[in-house]
Image (tube, rainbow over all chains, first blue to last red; front, side, top):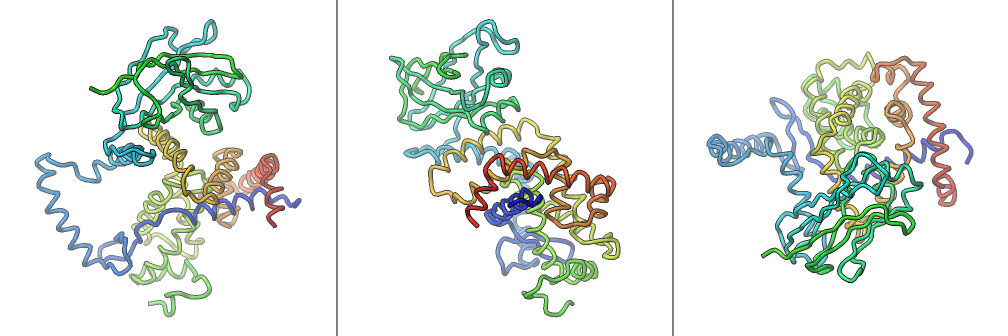
Length: 221
Length: 199
């Protein structure tokens, strides 16, 4: 194909395929005083108005007393909570329903190289429940990658007692983008794949360690 | 009431539906929103909105459009063209906002997405999301807007220019550059060859 629109056509096809995979949202139907969102086909405004009235009665007074937070006010927190709560469910073998703690790990500055990362190397202690996964958010300085070639050369690796590799994560486009945006790279340690002890998280390129940080993993009492 | 609009074989005229909806026709309003929703969703995707956020964003735009329906006039342009400034404005605000909460959610989505990929996820949809992300990455924010409205939605240069507050010549110029960028990126990524192979 040689036409100048081929890129646009490929984009259009991708858009259509993604659009077809989007989750359904409540339809908007005409109500007497404006639009009403409905999530089932036969619903009509009167029925929804009655439900809204009941919801107002149930939530209104406790909200007024500060005993609950109305959904609209809690929307941001709820979205985040849902995302966090889904981590245990998505990890195989996990039964814990509790939200997962996020552990932010900042890699120390490589020797003699960069300016804007901590120079000191301090062990980070992570207390964990053996039934739950541990989620690490690893902060990597974007300069480290910009200066050193394609992102696929980079690797994050967690090594445990006896220098045993517990897990390794190659960098891809998503990780590169997160680093460029100064966000952390999320790493998941499924339950059962690690034990209490001293670990080292290494950031390396082509086998050469650029930075490393010690992690103390301890069972929750 | 518009006759025979329940499930027509040919797509009904959105402008006629909008006129009827403005006059208080509930059935026309329902159908108008139902037909506008997928169009707006596709535009939002082309503007680079993450797929998970598209449904809520489109819902907001539809509600806003509904509230302002009295201001719509079919003599001044298409219904979708009239909705576009609201959609583009929200996408711009969302991009600017980008705060801490959004970044954290992004992290979690990435993580959850990675786990889900090892399961039963629809590979076709995953591949399409990746293609979308890669192609849009090659465009500037302005080029995305022009491509979404002018190329994908099929708005006229005048409607696109009006929605994006720019000149018609600017629309055509940006569209030309964007087409070239998309074509080059599709070739660089091997998407053109893959498409030819599938055909």
